[in-house]
Amino acid sequence: MFDLSGKAALVTGASGGIGAAIARALHGAGAKVVLSGTRVDALESLRGALGERAFAVAADLSLADSGEKLIKDAEQVAGSVDILVNNAGLTRDQLLLRMKDEDWAKVIDVDLTAGFRLARAAIRGMMRRRWGRIVAITSVVGATGNPGQTNYAAAKAGMVGFSKALAGEVASRGITVNCVAPGFIATALTDALSPEQKERIAASIPMARIGTPDEVAACVLFLASDEARYVTGHCLHVNGGLAMF
Image (cartoon, rainbow, N blue to C red; front, side, top):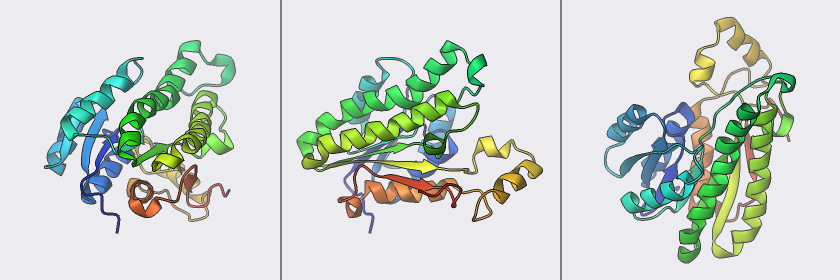
């Protein structure tokens, strides 16, 4: 089950906790994995830990030409991009009345537009091979909203709509397009919280705990596999019951 031998995956944002977990899961299932992000040291460390079938390619996805170039670079080192995981993202939180144009634009560029550019470049090869998987990491706030995160919520909601539309365009070519929407997950961001803050967050979740990156990665692995070949245009929420859809 979940054998990705012979497939090549590109994981953006692989220098972060969720991205690294996704990369490990796909690599563990036999895929070649191209690790991308802006923190070169973290990428190289993960590449070294994974060993064979792992490659590191740095990229700044806020740049307009970065998507096309990253796909070409990934294809050069791994031979193809059969699986694209759009995980890269950032936040620039602020109440709308105080939000600067550049903070809105930066989040939209990295969290939404970069995913569009990467998918547009990657589906060319996927269509030729008549097989492909595109998985976008969105967020529960893309469905629920969150005060102080209008830019982030808009980008994540946009990625869900984008993925559903694209899924309809490429389904006949053997390509699936899905989303995974995490809730509160244990990452560097939550590590910075105090024990009291973590307790309050856990108390708001029906499962009474914060999730782990591996639990997100397991869902991505399924959607990337051949077992999920009849699943497309779907958003899989991983939030411990925090929001039920």
